[in-house]
Image (cartoon, rainbow, N blue to C red; front, side):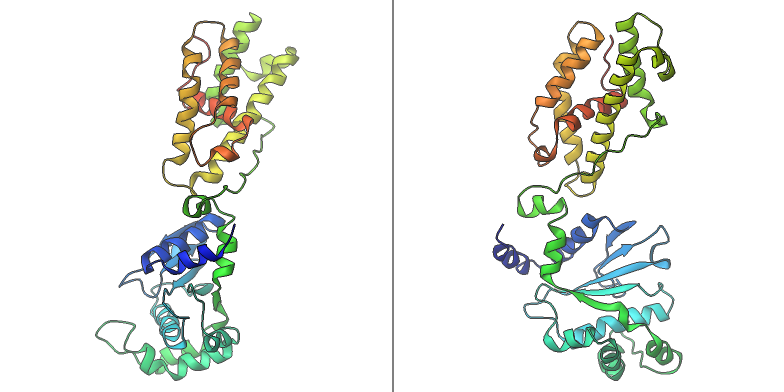
Length: 332
């Protein structure tokens, strides 16, 4: 894919769309407990934040300062934004962020880039210009000059936490997220592989129970729990195959749940349901209904951005997700 048209498109975003794009970048990497977009008049210098725990900004967190200008980011606004973070951390509004990353579609200019790569230079610039660039802008209608405890705090602040990300770096990361496909087109990144636990988990109870009904009808024996399959090697093996399908589908849905438009994974599952619905309402033995539904699901190609990454086993696993949600029953 040619990146030049995408770079041009991204640089044409307005400030709101730029913040949304940056939040996608961080959400898609799945490295945070949560990612929130706060940009506004009372954001205290925070535009997009990555929270590392439920403690929010009282715990570890990172700040992504979004600056969408027609030219590279210059030193004065960067100093003002750095000062806001330092000031509000001093006031106890939040703990100092681990990182404060300036993100601008045209990057920082040469002078600012040199300062951010040499934290002592950036510290000296922020402190030297505080009273003109920062003091009148941290709180509307007030002026907070660098003096006393504030001066000591700002001087001791960890300026290595300030850095920048280039648009090339952001795009390289964004391409590995599922947001890329919906924003720019192309294939989604591959889903995570399913991990099937050795023993049946509580969340499997419903669909496993429905499979045991299939085995009961087929064998003519009373099979009420997984342990009852000990003497039925064929059906014990079949159950394990169905569990692998279920967990592949679970991993598939988890991969794309927060990285696609709301309702995308639900619509994907609904289309699988629509494809198998005639088979689960047709008369016949439970095992026949099960195998027919799995075959139909495996050959279904939902009209979805997820379709290209959905392997047969995933689509069959969705059948068990539907059974687990009590929407599908094999034995009537």
